[in-house]
Length: 331
Image (tube, rainbow, N blue to C red; front, top):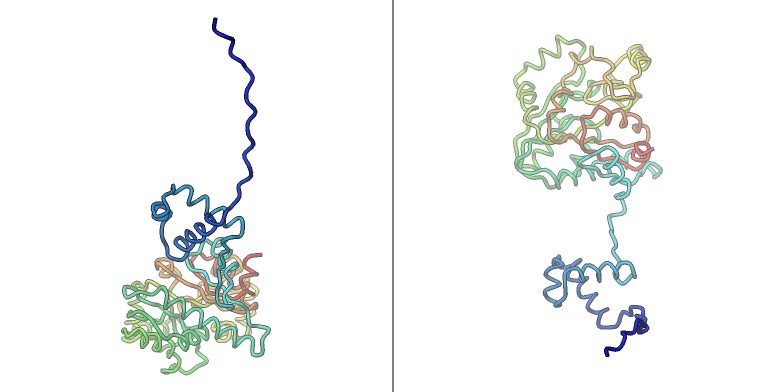
């Protein structure tokens, strides 16, 4: 007779909580060094220690959660990683660098422009290659960039617009473009002409001059353009400073808040004064739209609204700016 099988189960022995012993600790530390410092893959680490790749991943994750591994991201103090990433995401930008504002420091506005130039110069050193043609507008920000530029891949450098009509058009006015070309050891195409002319006929005549025509013919070859933005106020826009009081007030009433390569924009990024286009020697918006990379330089809280308008044009896939402008754009 076969005895009846008992249905009573043996009590299960409770599994003690996991204790990380000294061997596991030193192994985890070794794996962390391999993975984070030496760049070894989890598969390579697993083969070395004779465990599965999934266990390596689990041990590293546990070590992070328990504080055994502590990751730190350290940037130079003048760079704002959090706002850079937030701005890049908000505006779907390819290049985005935010640096800390210096507007409260002694000589704040000048120092902020110097920092803008230094950061922009560093970005150009990083992203410009020998296959690029670099386009630069004229302006104080570009002059600051030129002073800070020490290394650049060999490339052509093209000036994208004329200079302020309030300054004599001489070699000093286009020195930043020449400086960039000198560092890049490549040909330079300057524009020795004002940005805004008295009338369309004069502008057309100047565009046909050999040196200027040669520079303008290079616009469609540009692959990386650096463009600044002006606000509608004294000392903040080349066009504003060049117009009469009557014209300034007229365009203000039409909603002008920004200027980009001589084009006036309202707060929504729409052109305000198409009639000025014929009087301007500069790359057009249509030409800018066809370029692979167009990077906006903007500093100072007084240019925050203008920067917002410029980004709304859809011309830009990059920006270098300070925290004051970034905070406005992120609100």
